Length: 186
Image 1 (cartoon, rainbow, N blue to C red):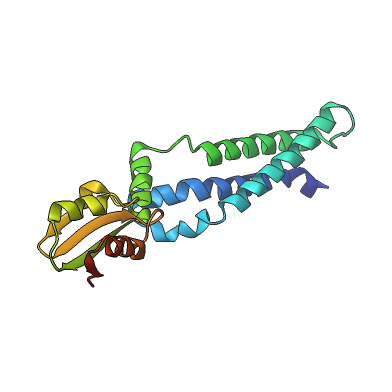
Image 2: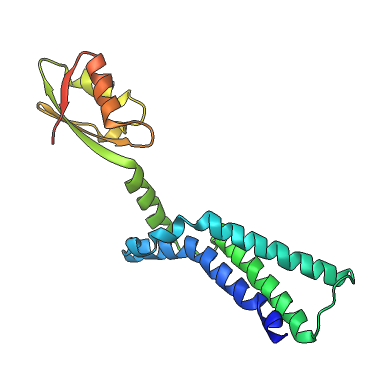
């Protein structure tokens, strides 16, 4: 009988720590510089969120039934354990979803990580005659290429692009379509 009384508290703690851990641990580790250790947790964030919501629903139904007089707790200890578990689950859900304790450094680290994850560089060699200003204008007109990153140095062109908007192959194809003789340099 005592197992039933105590069970909601550790389950709430475990699910809350896992859900909060998916959000907070990767940010802390990025700020510290050891992102590879906790990156695996972020993949399971939706699963832990679902567990947290299910736990909160179960605890809510139990407490509502208690307050409506349809369910009785065996002791005051069981009553308090369900209330504490509900508080832990609610706080864990709040912290996991809103992440209120992130520092400015953690937010900057997350922005840098997103920037690093989506931005790639391409270096092209251009042969034949071309107008460098027109080439720069043509490259920057490609959606996803950062205009401020285009550098032309003789027969070489370097640019940064967002890999979620354009690929290096599509940049190459767009320039060839405009009549440039370009190839990706290794």
